Image (tube, rainbow, N blue to C red; front, side, top):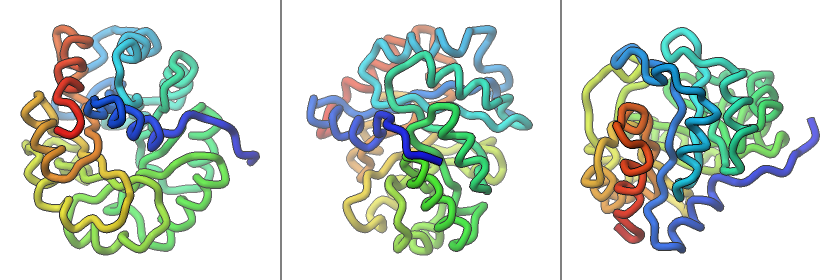
Length: 238
């Protein structure tokens, strides 16, 4: 597959930092096992545009169908609606999924260390690079952080919740605070999940995160724009 030019998530995160804003990646997710219906009848492209009117660093799209109600058409519609970098979140395990992600307009994709062996991760990271995608590799434990440290991926993620049980656990940003100091190198570090307010963003940033990914909370917010502005206003440095 030919490499296509797309906005880079890493560049957008650094740009928000230079602007003095805390980088926030907001999310489009249809539902979750814990919260039920999250999109609540909203058109995903319109909702993404609403979020993109605020200075977020990117938009994440969850396409996993069984637990989160997603589809690849959801990714395609959001990527077509906004000019921001789009992060594709799913249980990606094959090069065909990587190629489909690129074809649908993603800028970056999520790879989950808990679900992939090292050799699989390397193949998928290389496939993403060939397709012009950045790879965000996610860890949930210190063992995973140390296991993937040497791999050639672009962005590091720490999930504050356990994706292997579909994020139905209750948590906060304590896991980011505990693991960030073990993340070596200059890679951008993103704190994922369990971000519900500006205090969580500030904690994640002071703990070592360069950005936060906010899913359920932004979908449940009464005023999406005001909620995002509140998080972004934490500022950089936090």
